[in-house]
Image 1 (cartoon, chains in turn green, cyan):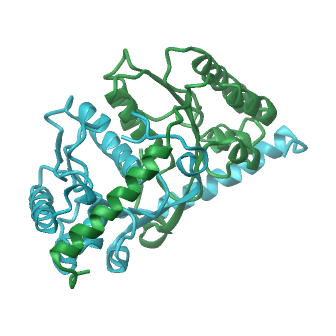
Image 2: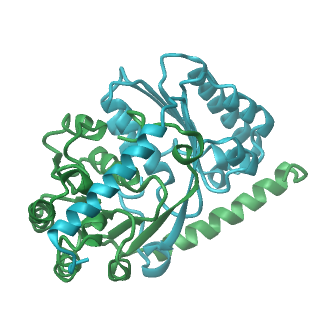
Length: 202
Length: 202
């Protein structure tokens, strides 16, 4: 690109801008999105947390339910607790499911967490609801997929819902408006023996 | 999995936990990571913002330099401005490059933003530095890739740096410790005419 003259550059950028403006002009629909972050890579939960940050910054109210985390204090909880009027943050997992080793207890925890998600989806006060690691719970059959899908599909028109976790069920991907797969290209845990570090992993 | 008895479930989870504990025990290295979020999907910047949130929550200091954003007020800026002692947030782009249509001005902006990143990397006060959309600037040859790589590779041992943007240069992927590619599975902009919405896109 270095060979292009400044004038050619300006022309090309003008064309790009015009193309971009045409695309934006064609996009007029506003609606609540069902968003899924899945895949084996990093960034599923953090990308959802970033969207929570943006919503807070625009003065919106957000509900966060963490299905797996709960046993450990996280950085996100410490920050969102500083916005008590805007974020209801519920870490409702009993830790990872291999920590409890008790299926009945895990199913009960999942059901309680899901009840909170349902409440937040139904409550018009919430602009955005994050069901963090819900896919994990679905993978273990701790919640009935049919009911979860029915609630997500029947959400109020302007309600954004984000569902995270690897192995998103196909029917959820089908129902979603925006699906991103986080793909692992390189991971220092596997390759370099690097341990989980605060501010990065939790 | 529903057919498994509770006892079998507990046994399987015990094995998973043991495997997990073995893996964790083998991970003893602590080091600053060079992290890259790339790909055409959503979530590159938001996943980085989520890591900023976690770092803040753990009491760390973070530097954020946005290479492309600047013209528009974002949700992330509004939130991070609430943590003036912990986040230095600099939105230094003049908008998208097709807005300026002026290569010389864009190169000057990129250089100024890069100077800030270099300062934050050198300053031991910063635990984490986010160079948001740096890949875009590199793609347009607005900064010398060799110099950027040299600075990133020579960063202090415990410094985490996140670089975002599509089309990450191969040499950057090569140098990084953790690389995630965000892959678009479904996007409502393209498929449903949904427009950019506050709290989701910015």
